Length: 607
Image (tube, rainbow, N blue to C red; front, side, top):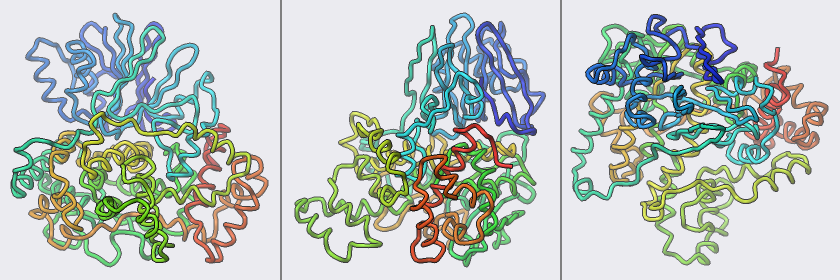
């Protein structure tokens, strides 16, 4: 079964049952009800397809199929896949351009194919049971089957406490897995096989690419980005966008505006807390009359912590960041004007926009220094406190692996001072062995450091955090998110661009800024990154909502058994008295407590 948010009323549902197989699809009402049958079928109904998400090149594929003799009777993307699968089997995935999760049932071959888009924009979960395979585009649908046990995955809890998010393909349930991005799963005769059909490309070794000029790369990237934006405006549903003061979303909005005759609806987020957003104290495209925009600015306030239970119910996985609340606010603002929204997520991963890319570049220059000298330097007082990452990197092996990646992100410090009970701490420690590591391409040791770090970003933080909960929160309000920077053709082109043009000196995303400066005011095109963050520390110092008081109380903490009540009480007191900033750790405690109540205990959303 493949479903969209079954608890929400703003969807249309269709179902098809054949011997031993049931497909159900709930489509957002932005989808054309006259498009055709769902699930999609071929002429003789021997191929069934359930699809979540748009196939941006469906019109082109439909023409090719009709020229080859196929009879297509609708404008349904799922029907296109059914006919394409009939011709080339699982190879059809290589022809699809879009953000999707899908299921294909081959009636004659008695074989099920599950697949997820290359970058992981659309989610897809599955669980093996004694009676078969259960799958869905959300966890709640899979967990609704009694055969799927609600048992904690302790290793995933450890990853959450370390990274601040749940690292896929694991989930917080032992029985529930997430299909990794760019992978396909085949289920036949009770057996599951998993294969990767796409991966982040290795850096180019082409002589032609090394000799290509900056202006040539700029032109190629500009053309590909414009095509990616245009492709995501292909249907009749008017699209809007999310806008901040940064170059990524501004570039998407500026390119979208070229395709509209009237005002483009954009949603922006501001805060009643100073210093948290990219809007405060700087201009945005809304301030420039050359861009025909219709702006909605939603303000995040101390009271918005009360939205966490609702946001987590849709997101289904906790984070320590509170970003799921901000996204719910933005989605609700966008839904007032449009059902399709473009956003700039993914640009920092594709072009190396984060601080840790620069930090690794600077530290790498010290790699020829003997390790014993680097460790001695790391002991200098200057590297204490706020420069803890530099200290850890100076002491760490220079090879790029998971341990170094965690240090670069700074998440290794989250593992310290966790308020776990002694029993849970022992369980988490035992579950972490043997150490988990990301499977790497055989050629990985020969890659440049920038590309190695990008590979970790693309497989860990991007799918599990940056876009991990985005689709589920958006679909809760029937809003479809489209991310032009995560078009796989654009990602493949970016992989060919020399790292020195992505991070030029100390300038992050240099080549992207060059490519979009023709459509943006110079002050925005050259503006340094000022990332979005939720006011977690301020939320937890303001008046706490009732659910937070309850879940952080000693009786509630003892009932769940994750966290030591005395330690949590001390941390909360120190935080609220501003003696220490325990914001993210306390948010992690609150989020796990909420998740346990709603999902592990199966009690559903708080009233």
